[in-house]
Amino acid sequence: MALRIGFDLDGVLADMETALVREAEKLFGPGVVRQRGQQAKAGPASMSDLVPEEVSDDSPLRHDLQLTARQRRQLWRHVQAIDRFWESLDEMEPGIVARLEALTTERRWEIIFLTRRPATAGPPAQLQSQRWLEARGFRLPSVYVVTSSRGLIASALTLDLVVDDTPENCVDVAADSKARTIAIFRHPELPPPPSLQTMGIHLVKSTGECLDLLLDIDASLQQQPGAVERLMRNLGLKQSANA
Ligand SMILES: [Mg+2]
Image (spheres, rainbow, N blue to C red):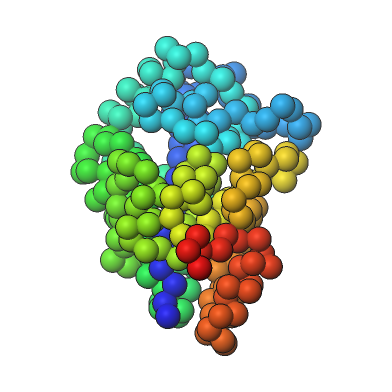
């Protein structure tokens, strides 16, 4: 069987954070943002420190900052006015989209990209996202702009695995679907959020490591049906709720 995998975009494949930080520095000056220091603090700033409540989530940031509510609204208004903002982002890890495309073709995976991106100036967020993926080497990408629970979507689409960097999305998928959840947590110096250490969610430090893991899962699946269940159990990945 072909693995059916849901991939989040921002923080997994696309670097929205760096683009937002760049725009914040344009608006408020370079002093507003620092690269995170080595010393571990209580925890990283989260997306909710950078953008307004209606578009934010609890994904941890690599930069240290805390904008005021007024600055967050100002930044977001500014970003929404940028033509094709979603097409302008860098990759999280250079070449990661092309590598995903190569593995998808070779292993015959079925991929759907899931994103909560709001509209900005220019084409709809869905089309900007498709163009972004195509420009980096993923042909004919299926992109779904999520407006409700990711868990319900993963369940309705009968996905085998979902990859995300936002803890609340990972918990949502683990709770509401049979899909296994791979959480990308890029802060080796910090303990992962407690919510990610429950429900069989598997943590990786990078998208590259995630692709390695997907290859392992795929290889086991090809060798012997049933092996994948054992492998996932060994990896601490969630078992099907009704299995
Ligand atoms: Mg994300």
